[in-house]
Amino acid sequence: MAWLRERLAALAGAGSPEPVVFVATDDPAGVLPAFAEFEPLTAADVSAGDADLLAHLIDFEVLRRAGHLGIANSSFSRMASLLAPDGQRVAVPDIRTERLVPYDPWGERAFWERFDDGNPPDPAMGDSPGAVLRRGLRARRERGEGLAALHWEKVHAAALEQAVAAEQARPKC
Image (cartoon, rainbow, N blue to C red; front, side, top):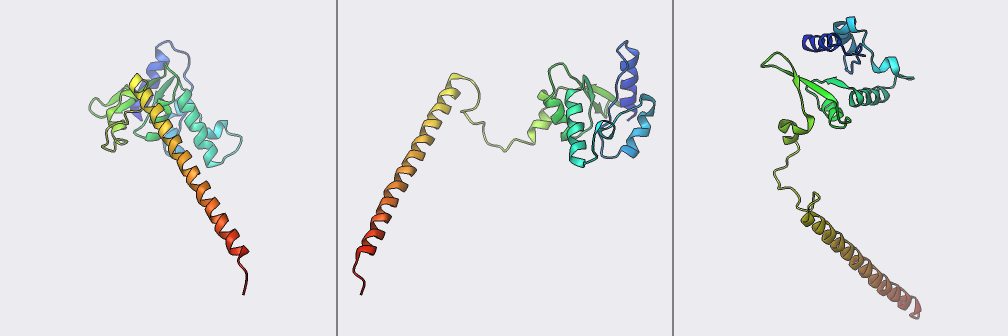
């Protein structure tokens, strides 16, 4: 937390307007005292209610819209930085240098590796002419499969209806 306080002091001292410090945490009692000098806000300060879900949504949206964002090692704050408008400046703690360092959420390999299932990327993804063609062919194939299944259902439904009608027309003993 000391690194975050140093970063906030540097922002305030760099001629930028007085920062509004918003703390998004699951442990306000443990975190807020460390930032008392900056008069931090939390979701509870801006929420009309105190539902946990609402607080998490407020936290996420404030993180996403912040001009400067210092994040922890959490997928919650990293996802907010991924969805932020262009121009957001993000920093993460670096244990080696013992300070906050600039962070590019879209360029962080370690974050994306957790989603790698080992399979090659789908060749129909992307905007290359080949990918567009593959998507079109896939859509046509899927439509054809759907039409074939529908035809199969209609044929078998008609055959079933004929069998039921024939059974009903048979004389009863």
